[in-house]
Amino acid sequence: MRLSGLQKEVLALYRQCLRECRKKPQNTRAHFEKFVRDEFSRNLAIEKRDFAAIEFLLRKGHRQLDVYSSPGIKDIR
Image (cartoon, rainbow, N blue to C red; front, side, top):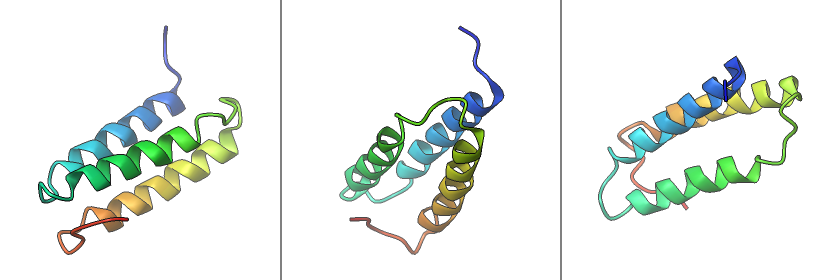
């Protein structure tokens, strides 16, 4: 199955988020991974042709990634 450009962007963001989780302290890494999985799974029901919603969520996800990837953020709830 071939993926569309948006689908590739979503997968790339997901992988990037999980990579950033590995940079967090070992005792809080699970919190970050659970947060990432919950955020992506919550939006699974979005229609794949709803480009505006997907693009909005991609922008939001990149902003969140920028915030949470900073070294000062040690834990997430």
